[in-house]
Image (cartoon, rainbow, N blue to C red; front, side, top):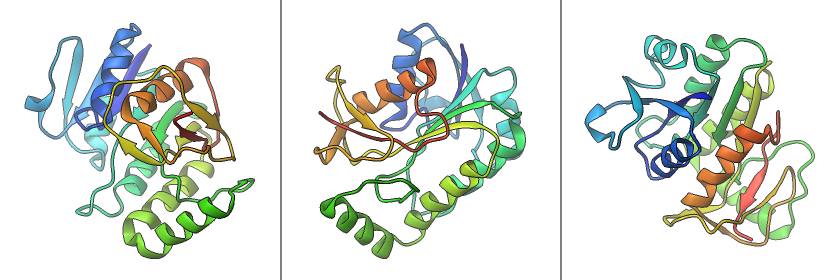
Length: 205
């Protein structure tokens, strides 16, 4: 597939791009600084995910869009702005896979006491970043896209273990996830059409 990638040069984006290339996909990456893109086989579009013109160039001819954008205190509504641009740009039924956060709540969740407590803390003290994730979900949920928003716990650098836990509404026991495993999960969701119009939890087994 031809896949458009956001956040390709970040700590999760790099293993995500490597995973997609290893699986034979064609990758077009939107990056602020093209000099940060390493390796071959990647088409680069310079710009920001909040720039409609750059996003239009990114998604042209793409079969799907995958986002590894991380939170940033400099742009507290980055994910919401990006989501709205994608909803406006992409045709009905287009595939999008991205990363949200375990702290947001969605209808049907089966969080236990620990996870409810952590979510409350994040929502109370997370400020604009926490609100951004919740609003991003609302934008995609109201759209006609075939979206998936992964909800991982604390992320750690590391190669994939080859196994992960995932469920649409019930968090796993582990409170961490390797970025390599998150990259694998995102690619699996894309290729296998998993968790369409859902925000699944994903963590280490």
